[in-house]
Image (cartoon, rainbow, N blue to C red; front, side, top):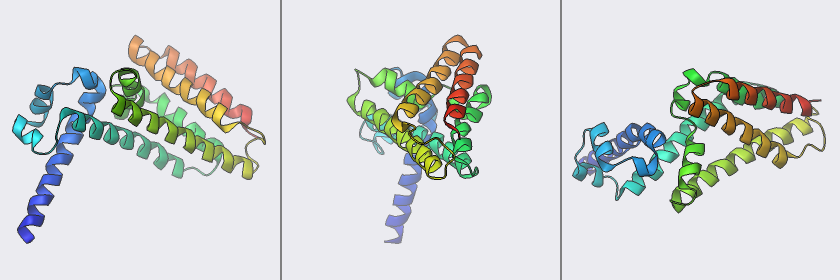
Length: 203
């Protein structure tokens, strides 16, 4: 029984190693651009070693997206937890974006945006993952706005869904412009507009 547990523990560690090692590759190259050879080369494992832990490249890609998404939003939520006021929680996004060029999480762009663009018409399962991530983001922003309204720090009648949609679009658009052009102008403009949006709903 002890040995079985040790084998399982080793298998879990190997699986996690594959996920963590390939997550940035999938974010950089996308699903179609990442080959099994890329995965094998990055991990140092044979194809048999990879398929001994995952049934297919699809399964690795889905797990890699979950890892990238979790890393991103764990960082955002941790910084939000360090702030007191709802308005400042929203501005955490802007603080992270301002450091975009030096943030490891954004090295290859936003995993949600990258996945959404590639998987829109090509990979239904990854598309659903991206949709779920966006919906969670909407929900978190709506919770912050509801908290702010309750505490009279955000204006009554603020449409949380409308705000979240425009806010997320600005953030993702700014990241996309920075990645494509290699310049920060578009990103800085997006941050500026997003900051105006936040200030406009503050009491």
